[in-house]
Image (cartoon, rainbow over all chains, first blue to last red):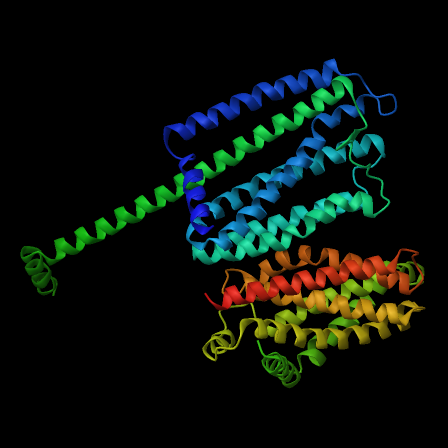
Length: 273
Length: 222
């Protein structure tokens, strides 16, 4: 199991290094941009307005996808955190993925809150209400801010990784509460629009809603890949800087220990006095 | 893990707290002040205070638990206490449970005082004492478990004191929510299904204590 996790970690990191990684990033970016343009065009011009909500319904091509990807991102953070605790020797890679996914997840969480507030202003007449899902999503947002703060709080990379992994597991307990809050409590927020086996919408609306989920997923993959690449480059850079500093220090030492310089060093204090 | 170890750690923590008089000198005056300030700022004619009594009770209990953690100073640095426990090869799970137990005892004492406070100052009345006692016990256990786990997570971290609030407060949000709802039912301010909230609170307690044991074991092995 641990060996498999190490192999997976090595494979994942190899996808984030070199020329191939650049091509993957570019491909994901291109799909996200083109797909985003298609969703915007379809969502704004091709799909009909709702009988009850009117033009306000067009938020469904953004809001559900961002909320869904928030769950995906935080689930990836939790999974990667569990994996790094199971296989400490593959900690570096899984921890990088966990941290990157949490950062992307926070962006999607903020977007979900923002788009939800815009919709809420039109539908409910207020930007914010103490609805169970809104409140629990806001708590999730601050929980992962705490997670990111904890990641920066220790100089020892291994200790920071291990502790933040536990924090991610603690935070994950809140995810089911957010998701099931609309079922557990009678609140303003509507039930899920898309459910397995039944759906409240159809036609072009359903097509572009599903497309928004696909494009959002590609965008998530792009951002995650980019962030992991950045972390890998940062680490390589740090390691290079560290090696250069060691070499420089050794050269200085050698220079100081050479007989000529040793004499100079020996005689210099006398000259100064 | 031996129960005697758990009890020994709890006893030591309680003795330290008793000798330092931290509860009576700092935490109880803080509780009293907060009770008064909430009363002054919300509604001196008691109307809003009675309605919000359950939530306020748990907010003050939460602040008290933060103050208790600060008095304990467990997360401030890599403490000599933790090093000596490591040297004595005490089971980390026993350390976690002992510290948690000591905090539960202190929090329960504070909650009892607080209950008296909200009855006298806010004019609330409890119709179901058993339900309220259940909320007090489970709420104190969950708060203590998260508090102690955060103490371990943040030990020897930079800015641990400030970071504690960022990490601890969001984690206990579900606990606060469930405890406040049960207290409202016990005060007949809400008709929610209290047994469901109690189950949720108990589930959180078990999850947080389990995770806390894992965290303490991992941190003490560093």
